[in-house]
Image (tube, helix red, strand yellow):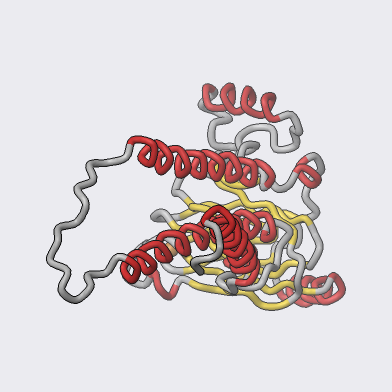
Length: 281
Ligand SMILES: [Cu+2]
């Protein structure tokens, strides 16, 4: 150790910390399976945060460990520590670095939110131009008749899907303590969400009593459902299978049991499900 010059040692340690952090950021296994087109967007952002957090953890905990060993009290040492009263440069450094990290992450998160269609709610759902959407929303809010006609909250899908009409619309009602799914085209009413894989789905959310939150962890989608306000989610499922739907807003004594399932079918299976359930509807 003594022979390696300090700058070279810092460089090696820096490279090591970077490599380890990048690896942890991709292999943390903290997230469930990705089952929607929106999921990778959220996960890329989350992985970035895990990467930065891992580097910070290694630097801070590494320094604590290193210093605790290197500068420990030796037997017979009764001297006082060196009187240090702050270090201006160091203080600038540890203020500027976290500030840059936080600003960078906030810009990235806004970018992801935009890509999922978070800024296009309210008024003209088909509009591609975001500023036009904002104007539409403002005039919409001013008009008491049209005020509640279009969703005010939610995600309207990626830039690719946003400009087109969704392939299917499902109306979802949250109530104490269940989710009810209405398929307006076929008249089907279901306690579970059935959708075809690879199709652009829009769900319109409404609450009957109190605030609920519609959450499908595998889709990385979560949206508050508010009485008297409309909210929406638009997504494309990328995996067939059964995924949990959870109410993520404490909504009463049986909130914990306000769960159901999203069943993602192959298009053929979905047609079958539609046919079977339309017949009995
Ligand atoms: Cu609830």
